[in-house]
Image 1 (tube, rainbow, N blue to C red):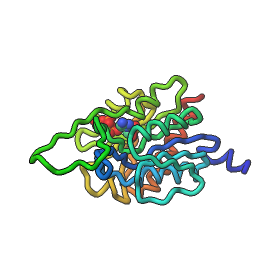
Image 2: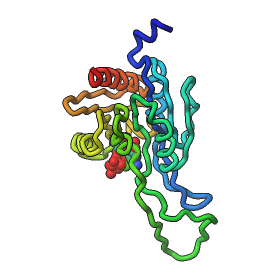
Image 3: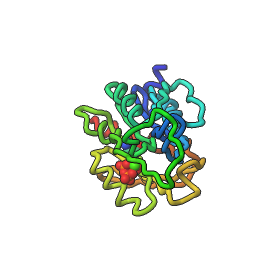
Image 4: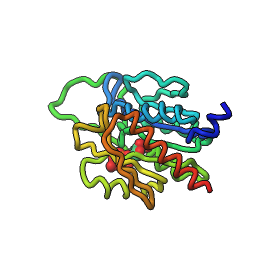
Amino acid sequence: SAVDEKTLPLAGQQVLITAGPTREAIDPVRYISNHSSGKMGYALAIQAQNLGAQVTLVSGPVALPEPLHVNTIQVSSALEMHQAVFAHVAAADIFIACAAVADYRLADIQTQKIKKSADEMTLSLIKNPDILADVAALPDGPFTVGFAAETQDLEYYAKDKLQRKGLNMIAANDVSNQDIGFNQADNALTVFSADAKIALPKQDKLALAEQLLKIVAKNVSANSL
Ligand code: CTP
Ligand code: CA
């Protein structure tokens, strides 16, 4: 409604979000992946929609229902996620990279199931494109928000990623703490921009997503003034 368009913090904004893990196929029955549940990214999609945004969610394989009123695109590999993001990024005002994208994929995906033979085997991997860095490098691209999952020196690595990838904001996640982060209902984040640091205490991922999005909304409007 007209009232909502004026009051909701993300009204009129197109938000593009990546969520979940990616799967990098080894052969037709095996893959390399990680422990991402997708909960944080899905919480961001649900809350961005609640805050008035038009949301596109590019999701790796997760066991979560597709959020209502969100354009959800299911992908499997990092290359597929990259392609889906670039098919939608031109319309986006805000890009939030919450996916735990596999850094490497198989150099050669076997078309037939690999048979057990030698006592040792080596898989050859090559680096995947960095979806977030590629979006941040676009001329006239969206406001970019990254996540940094770290097991040590959280602030140092988060700020390094903020600078190196040329992001507007980064939300840092201590994944060495088993009570929060990967596959947990709760999470805690520290948000960094070029000139600010905001600690968001441990809470339910839905509540945390709302807090993070309100910070994003403020920064987007500040940047566009
Ligand atoms: N990311 C991405 N595409 C990739 C790798 C990472 O879009 N191929 C995004 C993630 O979604 C996250 C941010 O980049 O928002 C940081 O991911 P992270 O794994 O913490 O950082 P990396 O740059 O991959 O560095 P490293 O894994 O060595 O810490
Ligand atoms: Ca990584």
